Length: 148
Image 1 (cartoon, rainbow, N blue to C red):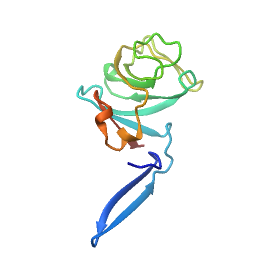
Image 2 (cartoon, helix red, strand yellow):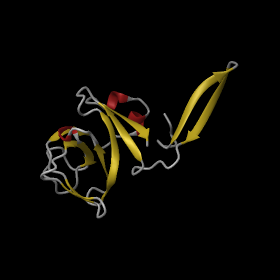
Image 3 (tube, rainbow, N blue to C red):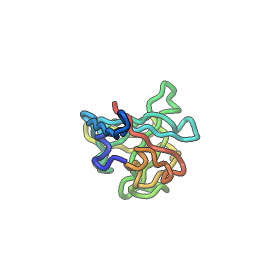
Image 4 (cartoon, rainbow, N blue to C red):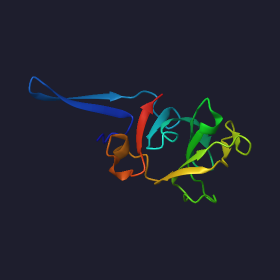
């Protein structure tokens, strides 16, 4: 586990019988420059979710899993205050895009996502435990950071 945060990765190995640790900083690593890879048993949910823009109501980024098939486009974002979502405020919600009813203004940081709710994940995810491989906390799936 990396105690320096997800933007620094390290690897331990041995060289000639002696332990060696190499550390590398991932450049330009932030929530608006880093995609999240979600692994899940439902293939349509699995994939790379990349940041669209910062949503001021949610207080964080909205991620999108793009697809050439409109019915497979998904969003990943936290549930904002005052939402009627069954997922619960602050938890992570994966929901289908609904081009006919979604309202998105990326420049203003405003998102009204109306698509069906596909999956809810605890507010503590993604965490560095999940990012670095301890999937025990994620019974419905596993989060991995990838770098865009």
